[in-house]
Image (cartoon, rainbow, N blue to C red):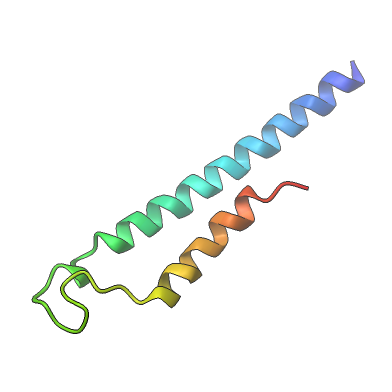
Length: 68
């Protein structure tokens, strides 16, 4: 029974990581689809996104998916 409880705890932990990654992914998607990038063409066109902003938003996804 102890092994089953250990597996149940691992499942809970992994489900939590998946939820965190999903949440961060949806936040990144919303950011990319925001009004900020729907305006008139400027530097880089109307779809220009600062790559550092993307890297900052990807970090929580990578952290959530990291498994020891």
